[in-house]
Image (cartoon, rainbow, N blue to C red; front, side):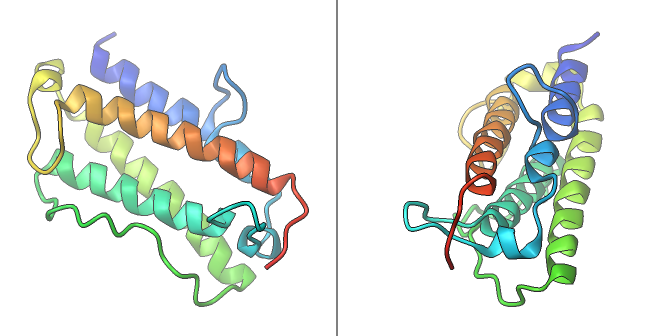
Length: 154
């Protein structure tokens, strides 16, 4: 198995599988409704919903970097939730799943040789960017788990 295959498998496993450390990203979102997702406790800067839209934007950006279509990174990946309905929440989760699916597909198209190359628009080589994306997903899965288990207020 190539290193690219291992990275693609880890992206998929930590997103929707059964990773070693605990719940996957989708596992952390299990049972989260729009009502729960929009809540933001006083101790948290973000709601689950805002984390989901942030992750979606970051996954899309990582794919665009791989494809060579990324615009300069402006750091604006946190968004205001304007329509906090159950339908909009389900769409947000669907968008997140889609973003990860297309990122994994883009990663699988790469060759191990590219891992040491520095992509345009990000610091460091592809290897660091891809592992950083993995770590970012895991970090936010932990945040979501904590937020989902807490009594929160709007």
